[in-house]
Length: 393
Image: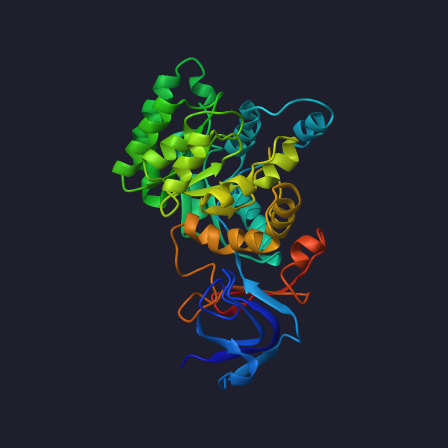
């Protein structure tokens, strides 16, 4: 028999359902309660109308939000790039080539070492309120290493992305066309069974527009849904390609022309602009202009881009604070983008929201309001997490 749990005395409940509560995109209900049945939300509403449940948890006036949806990360890797970060903070510039350092360490690691590192980062993220995460391959760049990265990831999340096209493998430094053939052929065949998505780093120093189109088209033909690393380091074709191929997301979106913004607005129901402020923080780069995108009508998500080179953070609250302070988002917009926006970027309707029928993924904040995520940056405000209806420890 399925048991029910009521979380009562919630000071502020964010549902991300405009039909609820205050009628804003956050659908905020004050003095609220919710009921979990099994792994789903069974009821939300005012506390004085809450139905009886088998067990109860008293929120003591604190805020409850949907679990964060981290729709862009790179967690199957070994080693770190402390020396590179130190050099960058001392004046060196960031370039795509630093990935090769992680490729060497990842190839040398055992399966057990890679999985242990993945689990460590997942636990770290969960403690900060993340209940859904996407993660990619991309640090093996051989058929065997890419396939094992995806196999390891697939044991821990449904949202697995094939990123054989992270950079041209060092083994093919003199034959990039040959590497594209490998990525779209033998490597794709080995990796597709473990993945839902296909991604490509469309950037100077990585893959140009024609190469990216060939890789994403081959992935789509194998049943994978495209997403694109687009326009991070410079202006380029990535965003337009993402829209053209109906990719679920164009990620980074730092350098955008007016035509790029217009394309994302026209594709707002299909292609999400996923912003990754941890990367700009860690590389001292130009911030994405979230205000420009939101005001134009694009759909925006926030994610960590957790990786050992350019954004070594697993903290969605940190990214929310950066988005508010440096990308001109309001606290409401940043929270929506880190929850419902991430769900949109993964084409999911069962997460990122706290409404009846949704998955019971939620975080209790040690604060009366979600605004404290930006108001008190760096403070560990997540005091409890429920994932699929089970309280995480």
